[in-house]
Image 1 (cartoon, rainbow over the protein chains, first blue to last red):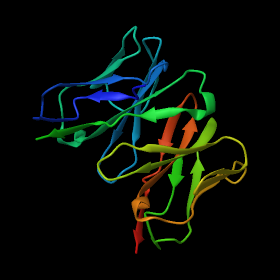
Image 2 (cartoon, helix red, strand yellow):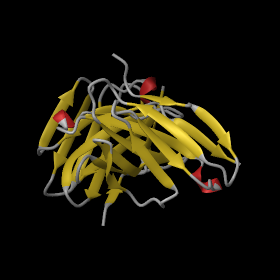
Image 3 (tube, rainbow over the protein chains, first blue to last red):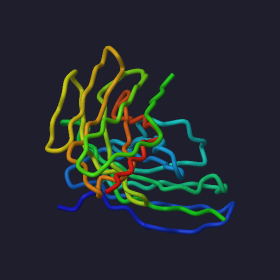
Image 4 (cartoon, chains in turn orange, green):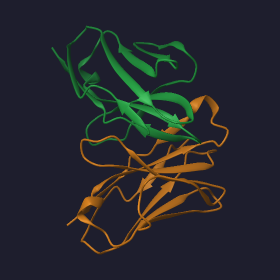
Length: 114
Length: 109
């Protein structure tokens, strides 16, 4: 049973470019959340998707957008990249019923902006 | 506001016991998580407490006091592989986790 998978694992972009990160949730999970983790910090909540809609959003600008597909997979898009967007981007999946607090993270996509 | 506080760094010796404390202040509290994170890797789930009390899982135990906004993670029989960052996170609202900056634990021989 595959856990949460993310792609790509590493990527390098330059300022002003756009990036798309992808996430496939754990089998059976229907809710996907995205987090940004800067070096030496804890993860920060970006937003969450359920039933193909953004359900909650953290304190991130509109440059950060996302999408959830009918198969529950999700994408995170970041436009007009800034140096400060360099971070590990983590995807977490769960069931909307939140059974026993089951929420698992993928290995992350490490984005470097030059 | 929302705030999670935990020590930045702790050191301990192999075979010893260490307790990592966490205080939290969040709206719509819905449980307290602990994750382990090795450098360059994703967080790995350790525990979830929603009711007051102690939950034990092998060498790891986690405690929660909702009235005090306080939790701790207890690691027993420390091993070198336990050297990692330990993240405390409060669930706020609908499955939104608010993380602390993490406690970096160094286990020495």
